[in-house]
Amino acid sequence: MVDTSLKYHEFEDGMWIRCNSRGCFMNSPALKGIAEKYLGHGGTHIVVDLELCPGVDSTFMGTLAGLARRCMEAGGSLEIAGATERTRGAMEGLGLDMLIEIDPPEALWQRDLAARRSVLAQGDIHGSEETLSEMQRTRHVLEAHNTLRSMNSRNDVAFGYVCETLQEDLMRHENEHGDET
Image (cartoon, rainbow, N blue to C red; front, side, top):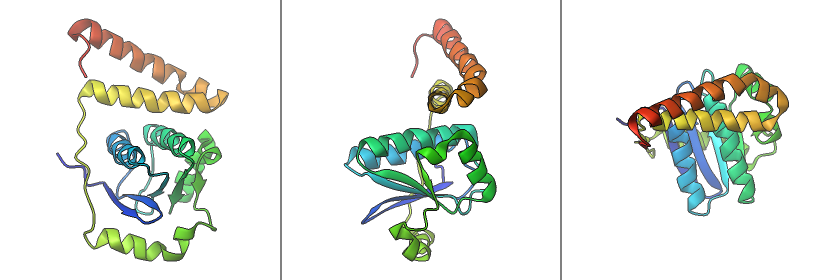
């Protein structure tokens, strides 16, 4: 199954990933896969365009935070374009604005924002083919929430139970079925 909720294109100054639906636990593994492939080839700068994204869940935000850290380790950055006020508020509420610039007015891509979006709309796009088993998805959700927990004590309290529950599910599954990937 091809996930078409994310489109991406590598421009001269970095990777552009556009989310065409809600950013959630279902498409965040694809986001991670696209970005990690780019970073693995020496890329350092990623822009995630949320103009068409009506909202984001905690897994998507945890994935963004993890990718922002990877970009920073590589000497680059992750930026957000087109965040709605609701999405901006959710990201700021979890502290993502400490890692990610949200609609930075001085960003070089701001001057050709419409042209970049047009490139993606004209078909120079690639849908993600990332498919995960239930256990792989659970591991991904756990990793995203652990990233959020590590950001500040408020997140640690807010997501502690979620992470404990996911960890218990993984352990139970591994005990019943062995360590499947």
